[in-house]
Length: 158
Image (tube, rainbow, N blue to C red; front, top):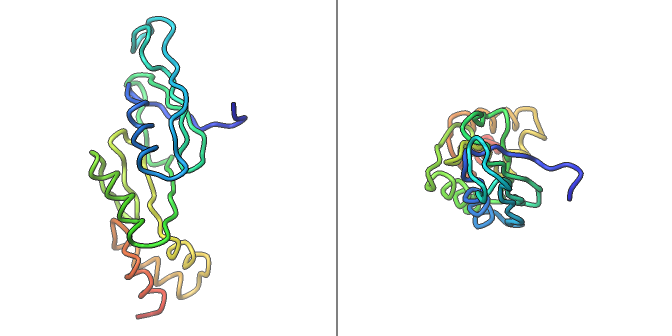
């Protein structure tokens, strides 16, 4: 067991979410599925209660706790991508599986978890700062899914 693990609250489908993440992202997997030892307010004995999983090497648990709490953009996974193909692959997987597009590389999966699909060129531009960072930032502010070619052009001042 890890000393620190991210716990994500799901209504009742943590196992489905964990399997989707494991199929979508590298270095991701589903571990143990712990079943409820008895009935509880939002489930029955034998239902999946806690699901151990990993997303891109980050240990997580999914807790099927009912509809009491909802996710917000205050928590998100940020996935660094190398190129447009990788950016498209993750973005499209999330959005086409019942998710929603947002702005500036953000999208939300069908369970309400927010994801930042961020090409490294964007992160590098922000780290450099100055006029290059500002141009890349201004270009990003007009996008939903980040367009790597447009960010690179903005970095060059083109």
